[in-house]
Structures are given as C-alpha cells and as structure tokens.
Length: 240
Length: 240
Image (cartoon, rainbow over all chains, first blue to last red; front, side, top):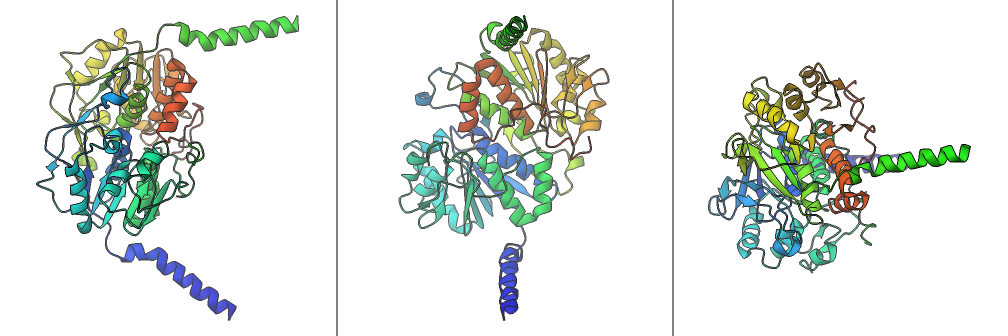
C-alpha cells in the first residue's frame, strides 16, 4: 500500500517535471523590450545566454522600442551626481507599431523603468502583447513595468532588492516574494536585480531546452550559476 | 629585532597596498573597443560595473569602432548552424580616426576577435593607442587581439578557457596562466572568459577606487563576486 503510494507520488512528480517538455517545442521567437535608461546587464546577461543557446537551437530576437531610434542607457540626471556618461545606445529592430510574432518577451529594469514618467506607451505595449505571449520574463525593476501593466496581478513575483519598496508599491495586487533569486508563476518568470536575470534565464533555458543545453551555455559563459531559485544572497543584505 | 622586522615587513606591505592609490587619482576616461561579432556579456558585465561606479565618481566612456556605423554582435556564419539571430547593434561614439584621450581601454572578446580575418585595422589601433594608456583590460578572447598587437609580449596573461588553445597560439611571447579568473601584470589586466570580465573589472575598481566602491557596485548588481584572482572554477572543467 505504502509502496503503491510512493509509486503514484513518483509518477506525479515525473509528470510534473516533464510537463514543460510535453507542452510543446521550446521557444524560437524572443523579444526584448527597450526603453531609455535601461540597465545594461539586465539586458545583456540574458541576451548572452540566449545568444549562446541560439548556436544550439534555431532562435531569433526582436529588439522592440517605441520607435526605431537608438535607445540609450544614459543615466537620468537625478541619479547622475557627477554628470558621468558610461552608457551605450542600442538600435531597435522593431517599433511598437511593427512587432513580429513573439513567444517570449524579456523586460529589463533600470532607472528608466522605475520613474513614474516611464512611458505610458511602454506600459500599454506590455498590457497589449501579454495575452499573445507564451512566456514573460522580467529582470530587476522590469517587474515594476509589468506590475503597472497589470500582468502581475494575483501572481507571485520578485524584483530588485535594492529598489524593493519602490518597486513593489507599483504592484499592490501582486504577492511579492523577497527571498528569491527568481520566481516562476505559470508562464511569468520574474527575477531579482541585474545579475539575477541571468540565473533566471539559465533556469528557463534548463526547463525549456534541457539541463545539458543550460549547462553548456553557463560553462561557455564561465558563469558561476545559482541553480536554486530561493538561494538569494542579497535579500538579507537589503534587510528583507 | 624580530619585532622590528615584522614592523618593516608590515610597512612594506602597507606601502605596496597603498601604491595604487598614491600613483594618482583613479581613472576618469574609459574607452571600449567594439568590432563585429563582439561577445555581448564581455562588454556589458564590465560596462554595468563601470556605469554604477560612474554614479559614485565622475567618469565617461567612449565606444570606439573602425567607423561610426552600428556594430553588430551577430554570430559568424561558420558558428551559426541554425541561422539564428540573437544579437544587437551598438552605436559607436568615436571612430578610430577620432579618439578622445583615454586612460583605460577595454577590449572584449567574441568570435569576431578570434577569426584570423579580425581586422588588421583593429590590431593596429590597439598597437598605436597602447603606449598612451594608463591601463589596458582585456576580457575573454579579447586577449587574442591584444596578443596580436604585441602588447602582451613578455607579460603574464590569461584568456577564455573554452577557447584556450586557439587564443594562446596568438601570443607565443606571452606567459599564459591557465588557472586564473584574471591576471594583473603591470598596467595590463587580462581576464578569463565572458563573466570573468566582470570579476576582473570589480577587482580593478577595488584597486583604483577602493573596496567600499567595489562592494557597493557588486551589491547593486546583485553579483556574487569571485574576489580571488586564482579562484578559477572553469580551468579544470576545460582540462587545463
């Protein structure tokens, strides 16, 4: 009897583990949302992982912004005490008016995502595209944009730990989880700040394309992975 | 007597530790060398750290390429079995013909740095600018470009572990160190592959701007640092 129960439990676990693989082929079409004053590593940790993966699987990426003008990561004047300029401009491939079919949308964070003035057009883009997505992944304070678009309502989610209070205030209907490198709720993945996006995307790769593919990508990146989503070295540091 | 020797030894250690600070103010002007098929995280891990640092210290960055045309990270056909396109184009701020004064030059790697066809103009640029630099930092296979420019001759250096044999062949007069997250030789810093660039630049920040600044940057990035340059989790993995 006990043995039968174990067998049933093991079977249920195996089915749950395999469900991500039997739900269809892994994604091919990715989109990256860009906006002024995006955080450079929020974008490029995940993009590095997806680029290396794209040498193992057919994949493409659309870089989507409000217009086709280059989008700058230049700091906001309010944060830029020394009038520094360590930034770059990235060229979008698609404007909001011309978005190809996308299975996975990646939303980075950064000071540009956090300001109340963050473009309503960007929020509306997220709200409109969300129902057509297979997966949404937010990095860092990108969760604040998703929250403002309403797509995190009723979900578990996490975000940047240094900007915690400010960001969670944007999602009063979200169950924010402070001790998490990343959080998965249905088809929505949210990660903690900056570097956490890379661990989250590597976990996403592992779920969708298999452990071998994820390990190969991480080793090529010489990335020391955090593989447990609740292993968060920074929540405590920021008093959460 | 023994006590005096200890005092002298401690004093020598303290002077050595402080020497980086008393050699002048920390750098303000950075340059990033870009070329087609650069590795995205080689560039953007270091740039993220420098961007966050630039909110604590006055700093600026020139993004330098052969021309002012956007530079793409699109994979080389030879590596792109599935005809994928997960890449981006970054807009240079300066061409080789118009480079502002730079104290620190950052050279990323990537397949574009490894091919024999890598532009002779790029190699010549490195050779020409090197004597005017305060520091050179290479990430990943960017060390191969520096080696081809001759600036690693007679120096200790390291590079990407997955591309080790191919890259060290470009620098026969260099003492290549396989077990290293990064290597410092005089004013030349070389790092291992991709993510190692960020640990190397954080160590550079610690040396130049102090431990507090480096820790603040790493914590804001939610980056789990490797702080010991000889702690290399990947050399063994690649049989080195």
